[in-house]
Length: 423
Image (cartoon, rainbow, N blue to C red):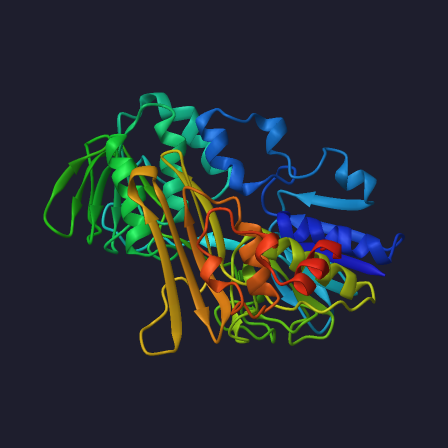
C-alpha cells in the first residue's frame, strides 16, 4: 500500500502513527512545504522569547521519519491533485502516486488588503520561520503593533514582551480574545496587560501602514484616526484552512475539506485531518472547522488508521482554548457566549482581588461550556462532563466551587469515572 501525506504538523505526524498501528510495512511518503523537521507550532512564541531552543521545538524525535519508515520530501510544495490517476503533483511537475492520501495542510494566515502592508517590517506569526525571522531582528524593534487580539496576536505579544518591546495590540472587537472569552474574562486579562505596559486599541483596525524612504515601517494609521509609531507590524488576525491543493478538484469543501466520521473526504481514497478539515462538532452535530491541537492529533490518528483499513469513528470535537496572559492562566471550552432566549442556564463566580473568574454554561441540565480564569486545575473534569453529556442536575450547584471534583459526583458516576481509562 502506498500512503502519501501532505503536511508535517500534528495531524500529519499522528497520521503516520495511525497508519503504523495497523500497517507496519506500507510505503509512507510525507510532503511538506517547510524544509524542516516536524515541530510544535504552539511553542513558536516561547522560541521567540528565548524560553525554548531548536531542539525543544521538535514535535517528535529527530529519528522519527527513519523509525517509522517515512520518506520525507521536505521543502517540496504539493500544488494540486490528479484525482483520476491518484497522484499528487508537486511544484515543478513531479508526480507522486498514492493508494491512500491524507491532506493535513493546516491553515494559512489571513492578511487583509491594507495599504502599505508590503513595507519591510510587516510580518505574520504562524510558523517556525516567522518566529526565527522575528527573533533575528527583535533587538532592533522598539515599538511593535500587533493587528489582532486573538490567540495568535496574544502569543506574538508574549514573545515580544520578553525582549522589552513597546507593544500596541489593535483589535477590531471590543475586547481581546473575544471569540474565546466573555466580557468579564477579557476585562480581567486586559487590566493585567495594561499594568504590564501593553497598549490596547480596541474597536478599530489598521487603515494604512506608513513607511519611510527606505521602505521600512515607521508607523500605522488607524481607522479611528489615530497615528501610532511602529518599526514592526505583525498581522495576526487569524488563519484559514489551506485548501490550495484541492482547488479545481472534485474534493468537496465548505470552509474546510468536508469529511465523514473516519476523516474520509468525498473521494474514497482521500482523507483530511487537522485545521484543514471540516468535521463534526460534538455539541451541535454540525460540520465545523475546529483548529485546536488535541483535535488535530485525534483526527490524524483516526485518518491514518482508516487509511490502513481500521475504522475508528471520530465522535466530534469542540472548541477549547488555553492561554496564559500576564501570568494569568485562562481556559475556555464549548459554548462560551450563548445567545439569549435559547434555553441556556449560566452560572458565574468572580473574585476580583484574587483574579479568579468562573463561568458555567448549561443546557437541559448538561454542561455545554465553561470559562476558567486564574484557577484552572479542574478544566479536565469539566471537559469530561461536556464530552460525555453527563446530567449534572444532582451537583450543578457545586460546579463553580474551586474544589469541585469527582467527589461531588453521584456514587455510580464516580465509580465509573475512576475506573475508566481514556485514550
